[in-house]
Image (cartoon, rainbow, N blue to C red; front, side, top):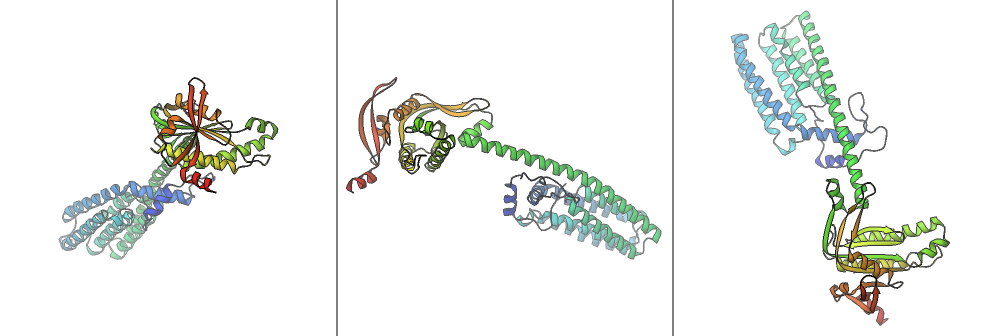
Length: 446
């Protein structure tokens, strides 16, 4: 069972509430005396979830009400006087049409989230039908207690939340007693007994509904906490791993991939060891934070993947973990942007930061290593050569391999450095990336 306000919340509000996070406030998750969450967003979200879950239950209740009404209509000729059959027939027709109308409305888009209003109308329609029967027909005394079935069914089957089910059923009980009192079918003693029975039925129903809804609310609360923990865990993973890799890791997969075409960049601060030796630790940390924060933003802007930092070394990859396919020009643009950004950062001595950058392209292996402090890392000749491009480069230069130079288009201007000795690879032709062709041409004309 579940339910909501008669005036339902719009889908936009529901979506907004569903995305809200459990706060660290101690009140989050607490319930008041009326079995309502103290946190408004949580209460709104619970009601929206109940509406979505219980539309089918609402339809079932209306079908059940139709079946019960037709069953009683078939029994009434056996227990009610013949003079009352005209009214019974009219009541059956009107109530049946009313219930069919309410059932049909549940299939309309407008009422898919507003069906609790239809439940309220159904309960009162059946109450009015029973009360009018008492007023218009000379019913037997035992006939009067049939209202107990409606009362208990409203608490146990009709999917209205606790706060609204009580008001609906208590109002219906009062309406029935008023009709019965004015109908004159029961003396004061019998009417008092009927009122006591209705009160007892309401107490039993309220107790059962309170327990059932409290359990549902606790289940919802636990599900939200679990969802929040999963979201936080996912955020933590995606902060240290590429998003596609984090999703695979959460599914329990072993993450290891071979890439035949990937680009790797290393950037390193020139003279960092000497700088760190003469500066305070907090100054060194502030410098790294400022520089790497700008590098992080640029890496994300160019659609590439930050892999890791080791001391003052910054590593980026392109063409891995589902990132953009045009990773070569993106990496070239990133290197130029990083070079410019570094010149705008000042070290503790007040001098602009100088960096060496190296880039290479080729095949590599990528995967997640470790169990507790895991990390996403790259292996292979491509990584080693990119690292050598950086370490064997010159300050304020972007050194690239000949393989990368051959694949960059005419939008980029490069200058040959010549051959250099690369450990494990022998002599290699390398180039300096100077910038975009139009940018370099503009500098030369000044």
